[in-house]
Image 1 (cartoon, rainbow, N blue to C red):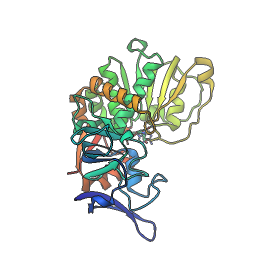
Image 2 (cartoon, rainbow, N blue to C red):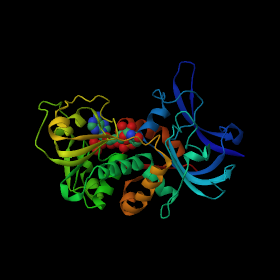
Image 3 (cartoon, rainbow, N blue to C red):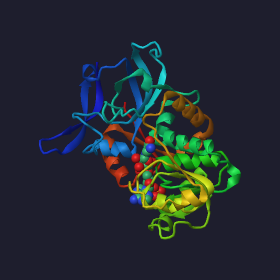
Image 4 (cartoon, rainbow, N blue to C red):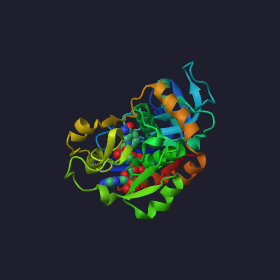
Length: 329
Ligand code: NDP
């Protein structure tokens, strides 16, 4: 049966372009479960995969979309049956495997998670990889002892996808959230999500000059990396943890080891892609419980498949606010 997909092709000069095409199910990769995709989304990584691939995509033509939610259409695996609501993030789907920018996807059963009760496919993609990763970051901070009475928690890149969801979850759990943004016009949006303080990006943009600054933050979800992460490390309270999620501000870490040695600061790496299934199920259950759905609704930017290439360019420039939800049908 035919279906629509957003296909990235490269021309002879190596230039990539993405267009919506009609395609046949026989073109899908070989795997046990076929999913009728309802929604996908646009993450930072999708921005890369929609263009030249940023080293993530290995062959073309390619169908990007690193996450999707929908219902099982057909399954050769006993774990899933037609009609099951499912969500997929990670496993390099949308990079080395055809992804969610299509009305159908075919994937390995181990990659799918049953949608938790209380979340629709649209809400699951409003969360998406970014929100799922934000939840993993909050869980990592909690696992390292963070509690709301310890003081303010910093969220960097706050108006982006990871940052928006982290802000809403932390605020809902009773944390005082300080939201770092480079877009002053996002202040009201972030306060509505539950941030109690807005920290202008410039305040943390300068390279580390002093390895230790005033002990300020009880925890941090960092979507930015680079100079900002380096500065934040020197501002953490004694024994506090930073969950390193992203690299929107760069891959370097121009820091010193002093915060680790003198203040026992922990730097926790957060990977969402290869996470074992048990962690995924735990995180999705926590999302269904701890992320207020009215706040999630406020983050949504609706889009169609044909609008995705433009949104991919925008997210690479840090111009997308909140979470894009792509209706692929
Ligand atoms: P977004 O583009 O939605 O958000 C990133 C935000 O970072 C922007 O909205 C902006 O927030 C801020 N920002 C952008 N450029 C800069 C800069 N030069 N300096 C400082 N701040 C900047 O992306 P996502 O939220 O989807 O992803 C955030 C990061 O997390 C990405 O690097 C992504 O690759 C990574 N990621 C990692 C995952 C993992 O498994 N570890 C999974 C998912 C995402 P504002 O305007 O508020 O300043």
